[in-house]
Length: 230
Image (cartoon, rainbow, N blue to C red; front, side, top):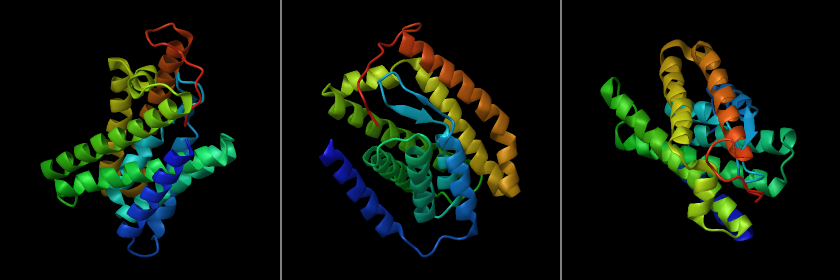
C-alpha cells in the first residue's frame, strides 16, 4: 500500500505545482468550509473501512467555480482535516484520500477545459458534465485501488463490493447532479446558492447511507466485506 500512497501524493503534488497561480483568494475559504461540511456527512462502504461522503457535491461545485489550484487545495485540505481530526483515520490514509481528491478535482477541471468551462449556456453544461464524469472516474478508481491493494483482492471484486449495481450509480449521479446545480447557483447567486441544494443533499445523504447500510448487511444484493480500505 505504501507505494500507492507515495505515487498518489507525488502525482497530486506535481499537478498542483503545474496549476499553481498564486495565493488563494477570499472565495477559497468559503469552499474549503463547504467541502469540509460535506466531508462530515459520511458513511461506511461495504468493503470494511472504506468510506464515502457527500463532499462530492461541494468538491464538484468548487471545481466549476474556482481556479484549478484553489479547487485542488480546498478539496484536499477539507478531506485531510475531516478524515484525520473527525473520522480519526490514520494519517497515511488521510493523506492518500486527500491526494486522490485533489487529483479528481484536477481531472474534473481538465475535462471541463476541453469543453470551454468559461462559456455559458449549453457549452457550460457540457463542460460541467465532463467535469463530473472525470471526477467520478478518478475518485472511484482511487478507492477501488486502495481496497484491492490493501485487501489483496482483484480490482473487479473491489469495485463490485463497493460500487456495483445500478442503484449506486443512481445515488452517485444524484449527488453529482446537485454539485452541478450548486456550481450553477453560485455563479448566479454567490454563496446563497448553497441554500438551494442543502435540503436535497441531506435527503440524498440519508437515502444513500441507508441503501449502503442494507448492502453491508446483505439486505440488498452486494457482498459485504471486512477488508480495510481508504
